[in-house]
Image (tube, rainbow, N blue to C red; front, side):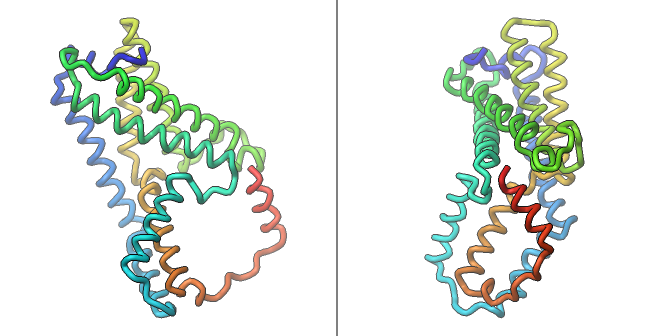
Amino acid sequence: MFTENPFSGLADIASPALMQGFVLLMIAFVLGGTLYDLWHKGSWSYFFANRLAVRKHRTRQVSAGEAMAIAARTAGEALVSGEFCSLRRRLAHLLGMYGFLIYVITTLILVFGYPTPDSEAPAAVTMLWHIGALLICIGGYWFWFFVRVDVVAEGHSPFRVMRADLFILSLLANATLALIWSGLQSVESAWSKVFLGLYLLSALVLFGSVPWSKFSHMFFKPAAAFQKHVEEADGSRASLPAPADKPAILGHARKRASNY
């Protein structure tokens, strides 16, 4: 199972061009959905309006070299999920993030490079595709049942679902169905076509729901973090008024949540 390319078996029911067209459609969904999300929620306009508002408070000019160093620092923080204080939350996020990257990259390699049984894919690539899906499942299910603050700290049911959960749930469904479909296909089960349909449906939900899920946050958050570091470097953030005091109970709740 782990060394077999599940996409090459689709050549009997779908042409390589159709498979590749479906993947390109998912990419178009992500790009279009992200742009729509930034426009619809006003994130794009807020980002630049906020930058213009704080620029007048800066005390120094950030050089191009310093900006590049800040960009590298921001990328390094993103690679290790440095924004999370909780170790468990960080590990769950890292497992899901790197699993997703491996899963997406190897999917592109298998679909575009080895779409037929005649073009045998390297065993390392197919194994990485399965490992990527497994990492998503490990990190995602760990986060969903044991790390979420509203479950651990607030006592809500792990089966309580909100619209904000659309991304993680659709991603988990897609990775889980991918593994089941691959396993059924390796044993030539008649159920493989059923789970193929469910797998493709979950991909449509995952990538087609970008405007309503948190998918686009993976693009906006690094940009916001970079902007924050630039503002700290040029003095504009330090010149802003301090935030108003919060009630003691709110501070206690945040301290409690940070422990998870």
